[in-house]
Image 1 (cartoon, one colour):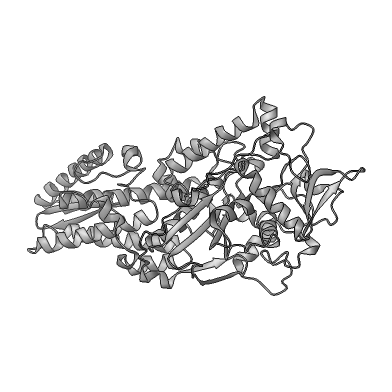
Image 2 (tube, one colour):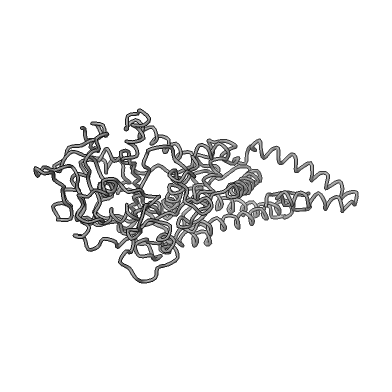
Length: 549
């Protein structure tokens, strides 16, 4: 029974340095975010000027990731990237639950060591995050590496009178420890179980689709932990902080504590690790909507009952749905990330997963992927054409160096409006349309140098906005993915673009010959056929140019 301990100099070696100068953009003054606890969008003010601490519940690594898992990761990656673009130092913590009943049971069924299974699927999750451009967290702690922290936290809860140890007939601790909900008058504040006032639409959706303490019957999204169904509890609402091992649990899945041998309950690890890496209180706690209750309600209660402040703001990403039903393995509708990536580029999948605001349900369908592919075609076409016209691309450093204050105002307004990705994407395509118009004018205007400067400014804005959403095709991981994952830098064309260019040029030449012969009916037919295929033709003094709509 070993317990691992993080290095003592962790904060100084890994966390963002306090010596690094902070230049928060003026745009940060307009940031408004939703808070699950208040059911309101409100102005964001960090607890520490210039710094933001975020804790997001990560994966329980029992099996392969599906797109529902990755949607949450992409959603909070975009939130994090916006904070970074605003100039904040961001400490982003995302945990790994590497021990629980499902991992133990599935490992036993498969004849595996539980820790080997957990590590195998943890690597699968990491590969999926990396492939889809999710930034690595500042720290990614595992539950099994923080047993001392959890034991200390439970002891604080017991000392404060908000938990109890179950003993056997001889008065010896059994390993079962429960949180005493009745002793904590604030229980229910996150999910508004005591509230009688009408709540907003987003909260109503969450209450209807997400689990609630007042719901009766089985919860298909959060099955009851056997320990929480124990007759030893004083109150049905009480939940396990620590639990005695099952007879089938292996010996290396048990830890010795003052309250008996066992392993952690579901919720305690996040309280322990968020406090370990973010200290007494932090700015944002995130996770999927299905974690709102019981996980986050219980987490908030036990953290505060231990004497620590909880997160200042709670944010929850909505589900990926298929025909209106939550996509999950338990319902048999999960789509594994490898299977989706086998048929679509990683850029397209990320775009589809991040195409709506994090609080909106995302309906997954073939049409969503078709629209994402069309978006990629429009983006990459403009970036390539602009690069060719300019003789090269702005450097990656120049793109990432653009401050939020220098981005288009409609993009900033959308991102500051509770990270409204749909509005931000609309701003990107508005700028692309302007850029395509400028490109069509390059050969027609005498002040071509001035137009080139405008094209470059527009290209830089487009790529900086895309980079903020993790979608700049000339950034990692897309540029390393080649034609399947990224656009050309403008100095060389992708094979796909070269083939498309040749086919369309042939049609434009035929149209030019028809116009020369005054066969305008044939010329119009060629133009209309290209238009139906999504290609816009611009006629100028130096000939015709094309772009994707």
